[in-house]
Amino acid sequence: DSGVTQTPKHLITATGQRVTLRCSPRSGDLSVYWYQQSLDQGLQFLIQYYNGEERAKGNILERFSAQQFPDLHSELNLSSLELGDSALYFCASSVEGTPYEQYFGPGTRLTVT
Amino acid sequence: AQTVTQSQPEMSVQEAETVTLSCTYDTSESNYYLFWYKQPPSRQMILVIRQEAYKQQNATENRFSVNFQKAAKSFSLKISDSQLGDTAMYFCAFMKQEFYFGSGTKLNVKP
Image (cartoon, rainbow over all chains, first blue to last red; front, side, top):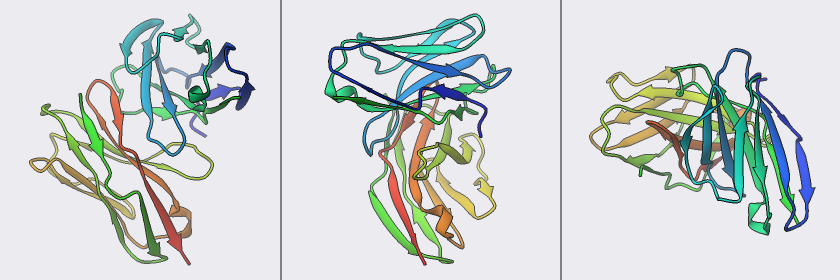
C-alpha cells in the first residue's frame, strides 16, 4: 500500500459524458501527478499540481482538467468522453523537492461505452 | 522531448535464471533520473530501482541491478534468480522535469 488513494476503482460511462476522478496523496506530500495508461501502453504524463498550483502540463487534452484543493486532494475531470478515453488513470504523489520519489495510487479504470 | 524505447515487447525466463531487460533513451540533458517500474496483474505501479545520472555506480536492489551506460544512453535491468512473482510488465522511465515512460516489456517467469 503506497498511501495514495484513488476513487472510484472502476467507472463505466457513455460517450459524451463527464466524470471526475479523485486522488488523495500520501500524508505530507504536496505534489500530485496524473497519468493515463491506455491498454498495454506505458504511462502518459497528464498534469502535475504542487500545493494547489499547476506545476507542469503534459499531454493533457483540452477536454480534461484538474485541480488540487486546499486539503491537497486532487480531482481529474474528463468531459465529452470518447471511446479512446478508456484507460487506467493513475495518480501519484511526492514530497516537495523529490519528484523522483513518486508513489502511485492503485488507479481508476475508466471504460467509455 | 525525451523518448524512452523498450525494444523487447515480451520475454520469458525460467525460474531461478537471470534475465536482462533493455531500455534506451534519448535526451540532451546531463542530469536526470532513470527508473524501472514493475506492474503486476494487479496494475499497481511499483518502483523497482532508481538511478541518478550523475552517479557512475550502477544501482542495485537485492536481486535487481542496472547497467547504466550514460554515453550510450542505455539503462538495462538485470533480474537474478528470477521468481514467479517477478512476472509482470516492466516499464523503463526517464525523469527530468516530467516522467517519460517506455512502452513496457512483458516478463513471464516460467516454473
